[in-house]
Length: 118
Image (cartoon, rainbow, N blue to C red):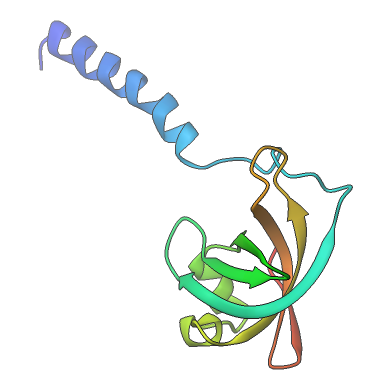
């Protein structure tokens, strides 16, 4: 490999690394001083990376809840069927500071069992 080729490859790799760092968000956008708990029926769910998600309608408000990654959900005993649309779920979480319909979830209660997600 020539020196020029090596420098080009290194430059390309360096340019791609910051993009990968932004691929996963931090939790700084959620207000941990305003925790809340709600119960409702799951309208929509996704059991996929980077995080599982559910949508629920609670007291006339549509919510988008960010859960744990699928690997952590499975390690905690939660399967895709357990968060399927139509199931009832209780969530405890923190609202997003800039998205009024989104929250990060710390734990869920499914079938009477509390499961920590973090």
